Amino acid sequence: MAAPVRGQVMATGDYIARMDADGDGRVSLAEYLDWMGYAFHAMDRNGDGVLTPDEVPGGRGPALSLEGHRERLAATFARQDVNRDGFLDARELAAPPR
Image 1 (tube, rainbow, N blue to C red):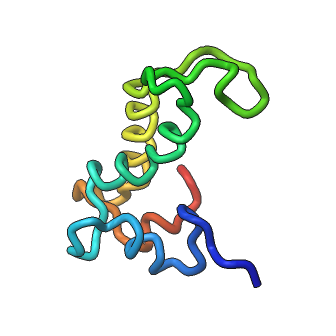
Image 2: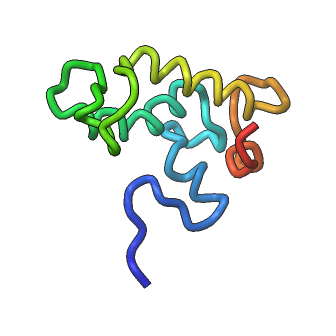
């Protein structure tokens, strides 16, 4: 079996273990943004904070700023935070996107 890559989780608990930077057993919005933002930074080859079509798979679509990307992630976080406590637990992280 191949070794997991960064970002790949093998069990529900892995979501918390990989994203929970302060080890409190839950994921804050800041931790979520930090973890989920790694792909943006990897694709932003020129480091200008904007993904242009030539920097994304398929080479299509409008440009996307880091700020816009973070806004989308924050909206996803809010939808996943079912109990509205401002944090995601393993169950909320593992749930299908809402």
